[in-house]
Length: 294
Figure 1 (cartoon, helix red, strand yellow):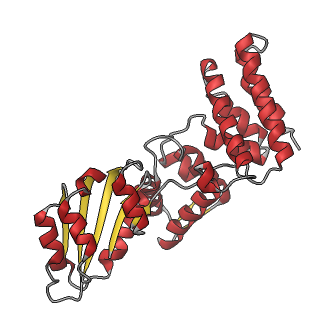
Figure 2 (tube, helix red, strand yellow; figure 1 turned 30 degrees about the horizontal axis):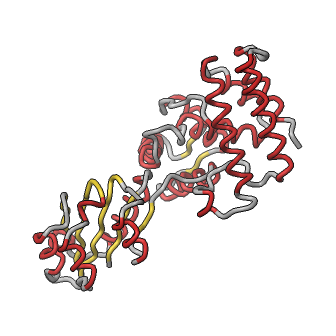
Figure 3 (tube, one colour; figure 1 turned 120 degrees about the vertical axis):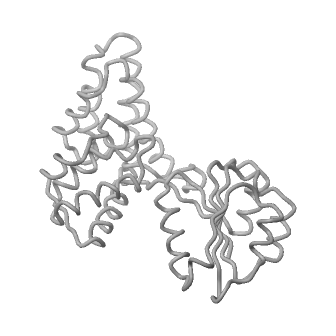
């Protein structure tokens, strides 16, 4: 087996690694971790048979697909060792390269990307809590998500699971007070959280989030919201492959509602740029209109 893992969610990569390694009866003798490129030494290691086991696992960590653009790797692809599970983690992927296209055609690529919706995120977090014998209240989960700020750069599920373990070690019954006391906040206003609040028509928490945004970032935030609505609108006509993503909170809205929302935001941005809408009231004014669209 050969799998090439890549993406911005290391949680998925770690889960796949653990799953493959867990199947070994003698991991201390049949598991290797390597870095660099796929050279003759790597090819030899892959072709070597396992010791006192029916399979072995080799994990190769590379910076880019260029590390796989070698004669040895191309030869190995033609005749891989059936007793070797080769897991390759690629840190930076350029999808324009011939190697990416070749791996895709061979069905060897395994994308591990950030989750597309808050619902997916909540499902995974609840499963992690349950697997550790814990449980969490609805209010506590909402507070956890707010403090986590999953869409923020550098925040991922591994980061989230680390805090779950911390909370579980304190008390398996996680409530809102625990989350507020022990979990540091990454909270900042962002498209992912604002979109969720607009979708839920949660005006109180929406306005709290808006109060965190500096006045000079109003156009930036509105542009991000506009992008989220546009993704949902495009998905009405095209598939995820054509659009490039399916990550949006507004997929369930009708085309008419999406049109209204995009018009509200576009007009709001124009009003801010023209000076017709004071910056200190701009975001709240536009988002208040979005809450009323039906």
